[in-house]
Image (cartoon, rainbow, N blue to C red):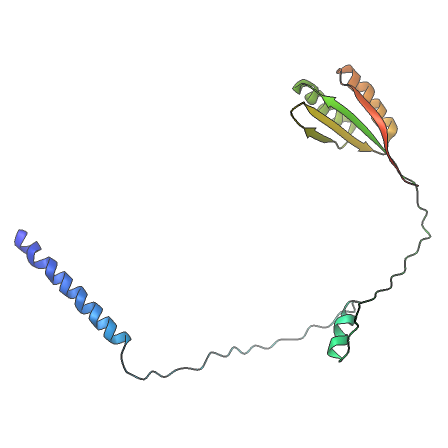
Length: 159
């Protein structure tokens, strides 16, 4: 076994060396290779029908030989609609313990109001923005049962 390994190792080394030499000769051969032209992909593109979009007018002008220095667009709107004023109210409350937060979330789910909670080191502060003042005032009364102090203020009034 020892003599087999003694002769097998050099034979493998010589075989690898011959392979490398043959590979290098094949790569660097002086044969002229016929260079092929790059492959030309021919495809037929069917033009899409242009839809009548008002912005396409600006892209056509450059093809026609002239273009506008500034794209000006005139839009007319009908202002016949009655603009109503919107009054938005804000309910704010500060929460101290997790039980108050749990009770508050349950009440908010019952009243179907969206809310914003802001957490910091001092506790949790709740903000609710709504147009319905009666709903917010009824929520304040319910929150007093859980010893949560809340107040409703006018947040924004549009004219």
